Image 1 (cartoon, rainbow, N blue to C red):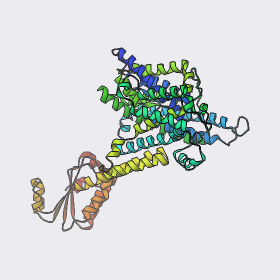
Image 2: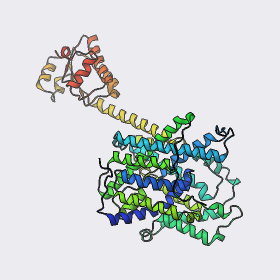
Image 3: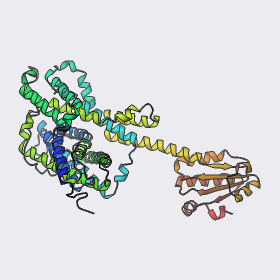
Image 4: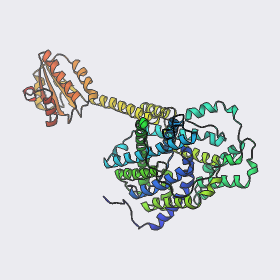
Length: 552
């Protein structure tokens, strides 16, 4: 295995252009997502730098640009909130005192970053076990409902930022319940105005301008400059302008954070890490497929998971958000000429330079601007194409999508994926069962036997013979149906059970064949099993059916 996949210097000019462009575009997203996660803007920047650099070098998709994404940020926000809440009100064993808010925040973030490390380790294991191909098998209605739900969550979480209700925090349901008391809050016209300007900019920026400067970056600069040079337009005795700004961002290189474990919640930590790993893997591999279509290349799924895992493990160790392949930044990189891991690594170096030398200038960015940019991120994640065709989509797929969407937004992300997969599996099993049962051939008269060979036709001419043929791989889903169907047959004293078109069976189906044999025995009917291959023969013999005896 090559140390660095897809790395070469034949596209150096395009990679430099792509890396610089992607780095500039990533800046507002990294800051906004760090803020939205609850870990702080600097965590978003560190996450973009670390995952962007290491996932590019060690991953399996040449043009992929990685960093904090909407779905990963939503999960991280839930993780941060969960573990901070866990420590609030508890006694600090080191001091014997009740955790203060700041102490609970620090302890909760330490646990949250440890789950990022766990998620990265799980991704590396996924790659080593070559599970990448299975992650790509996720049913589309499940993926669509989940990603749409993530988009909706991102939009809901930005409502307080866009409206200037900075006191409102919490989950989606918590925000809705607090907005129900909106009359208790004063409308912040300044925040709303600047958010509206930002939304108009990111959605309606002319393409001619967008070729030179991406709309999120243009909106970030525009909103910041307007508030900086025309503060009177947004001044309010309700909310001081300073409270509407991002504020100071730490500068310098990140500190190493030793993983922290809390015994009483270690199961929750592992579950959160697994969720980050699964979601990050799906998010990254979907972006890899998009990159393949644009660049006409073929990514290596398992190598990509290893690269993403290395990036996320190191990001968690240095206080960064978890990341994944970012579709918009990858598209920007490719359009600007980036094709190899050099562009993704350079994008991270550009962000590092900004953190080391320019983070102090970011403190003037309005929170409403970042909230509006994330609203755009949320609407981009929503699967509008699937929603538009929901009426004409098969009812089963539409039901799965809606259920997963609802559970994602209002209950739990992991539960949403689990319920979606169970629903999809049951529907698939029912369809396969119907196909398997429909493939059964039952012939009792010579007039029905034109398609059979001469030997079987001769047996039917002898009279009172039932030719019963199973076709295709038979599974447990059709087992009861086989017995039920056979039980409807009558007027026979001999049965020919043809298994020549059955490549494999499972234990439940073999028991059904045994039951057919028992039915024949009860009716004193002779049964002959023909055509069983070696695998099927051994399976039946292992449960006590003597094929040799049954074949004579």
